[in-house]
Length: 240
Image 1: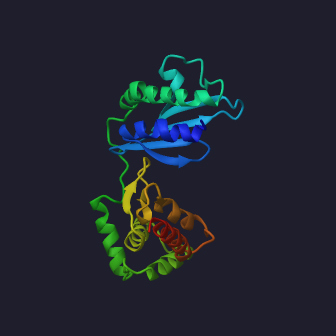
Image 2: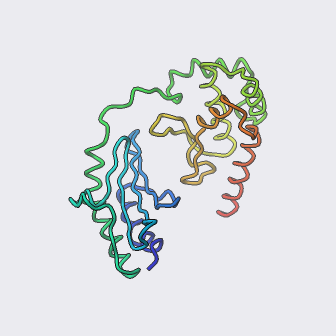
Image 3: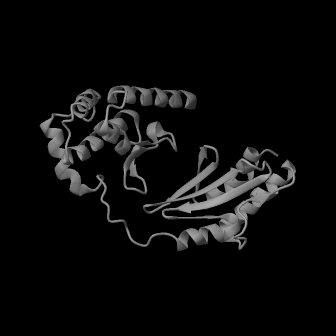
């Protein structure tokens, strides 16, 4: 059985019961869940040096550990198998490690205090965002505002607290026009999650605006929006 098939049939159903969601494959198979403000991740990858070696890792903010270390084999990092027929059994072993050891490790390494950094989604930033919207007569239901904001960014007219307002306005326009929901990552950077109703499709609005703040990004905000809108349209067509 192929690795991808074994993970799909043996690992995904069990790990979903533990609250994790399959996020895709980017050189490794990634599974994530969010407990309060903390993102917890499990990855499975294949060795570049030995084709018959797999590794499972458990990752959270400021800490990580591989599956072998969790079961007391700290001198080893990779799990070896003889042939592809052995892959399903190894994946089942990974499920067992996650259930019996990984969940406990996540609990023990979870920060107990809410981070001090503040996020623009907090209501206290309303006093910054609303005056900016009123001053520039921004319509959150109209993409024309993106053209105005892009020009402001390019001409370096956005300073200090205005940056917070721009991040909010751009994200809110995207949510209203394309669908999605506000959220933030482990660094408290605001992002739009489930863009267009697609689970796992997210955009970090904070990083997007930061690019314009430092230098010209290459695409206008409107062009970026149109690209995302096209992707959302294709997603919805495929669902139909």
